[in-house]
Image (cartoon, rainbow, N blue to C red):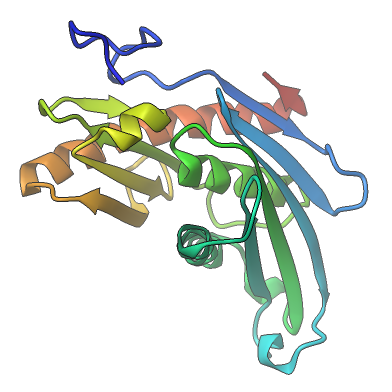
Length: 224
């Protein structure tokens, strides 16, 4: 949502993220855990494993099987959560060194604490933080960000729920590194090629911000 003069309600610049928060080691009974927040959007992630597979379909002879569960704030899981699970699973399979743990399962469980826009980005960051906390080796530290295209053509980074609901379209991007190598791109709405390109550039800058924050958070142990 915007004020009449085009300024965002929370008075952020169009290319500014909300306040970031990252807390690791918050769940004692998991191998790794992380609560990541983008202001009023918050996701708690736990990682269990690698553990011996008890399901033949998930027992891969050359690598670990990563399973992802995303639970909404309340109620039953819907198609949006299932789509997000598939996206997150694909990202984690790309960056985790699953070949180090053949015939095992790594379970990533994400609980949405509160949702105020940019949920997929927040969930990805929580998952990466929890996996790092669990000591799961990775080829790179991915990062995620999203933006919305307003009806008057402006691009706004890390959209809140009102901006999301009133947007012409939204774009999510996950980058493998600060060189701009994309691991995943998702878009919603009808966007021109130029709008998509500009959105990906903005998301890349957002990814660099969240990656730097997440990396420093892991070094510090806990950061806000």
